[in-house]
Image (tube, rainbow, N blue to C red; front, side, top):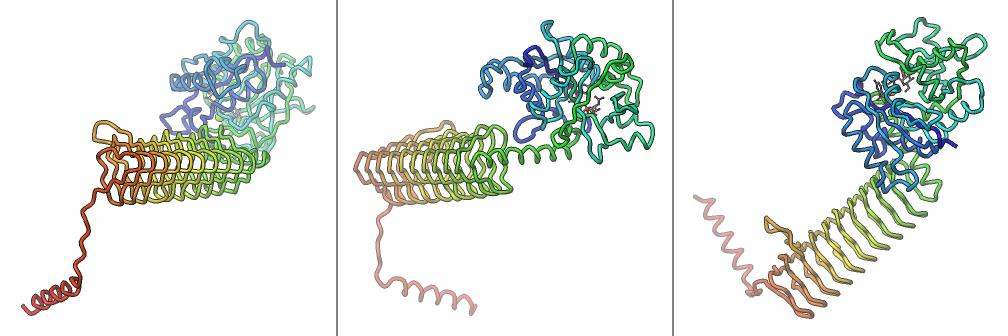
Length: 483
Ligand code: UD1
Ligand code: MG
């Protein structure tokens, strides 16, 4: 339905109130930059094209958009890729000027334009589509716009209506003229629909005669009404229309977005405790449990019936069905396969592949290590650049010495091998299938299959020596005290 509609999204402002060197629209909400959400809403609403107006920090904003929405954006359904373009607003002279830059980039085929702001992350495709529909439904409307009503709309442009209730004008907070105007509870969340022709004329007419000396997009409303055109208001949900202008509002938007995501997972059959943080882009199978203070980010996927216990932090982690992640385990860019058990306090670093039913216990760190099916390392170990065979057991305190100061080397442990506690395996080194490494051994040579490697000094017991030693030491101490 919106195939011939182009969305123009304004994202060129610096966001002075953020007090940041990062452009405002790149500040994160639930794991994605602010600008991601309105662009996605436009695509989901079915807009044929999206033009994002960039300016301040333009290179960074363009690079983000190209990655997230370009022709090769893997996260996006194929039919939505490559529909986002940018237009440049050279100087930030206000939202009206930005819209003009955007309109210049709209293709001739477009019949209608939806304009909204890049700093309103919670709005959805339905909110945007409702405004487009209102324009279609009213044959004499020049503009359709969303409006919201709340008790304290401080900071937003207010909707001024005439005695018949028709919208006349939007007046910015700084331009309000009287207490009566300041008391108006209806405000402008900033979603507008109009024909390309109308918008072109309206934007050309703008002047910066206002408190901020800027070209206001909102003045297209009075332009329409002064020429006898109708402006249709679309009552909208205020809870999704909050703009982000400073870090306090950023925190509120983040909180609201996270709550929305938690609810989405709960409705889909995941038990999610209060206080968990699940960012946008994470997927979770049904009957999984995510406990309080767990943080799930990036491309993390959690399988059915898995448990992510208190305080776990997962970044781009793929966790299989029935996996148990015990408290305070940290996983990044790794795979944990079905029914494996991790933690508490395990650290699974990038490129680790923890096999089915494998176990990693407390204070075990892996990096670029594969644990095959049922392999175990239950306590206190560093396993870097390793391949641990099926069913092998790595004892407490084992270290894979993978780094010589210049290069990383691989430790290979065969199927069913047993590595005694407190061993060091100096890579590159291979332990054969079924081999034993005696406790406390420093392994520097390959160990053949089924062999025992033992590299510690032989133990000697001296009978009765302990009491002789004690007498001698006591006498020494007493002699020293007399001096
Ligand atoms: C704007 C509206 C206000 C509305 C509010 C809703 C105007 C004049 N005011 O105010 O009525 O209640 O949004 O959130 O439109 N931008 C540019 N170029 C510029 C200036 C801004 O691209 O020269 C972009 C910004 O990057 C931002 C968006 O436009 O994403 C809105 O700008 P902002 O300064 O936040 O406007 P508000 O003061 O919030
Ligand atoms: Mg704003």
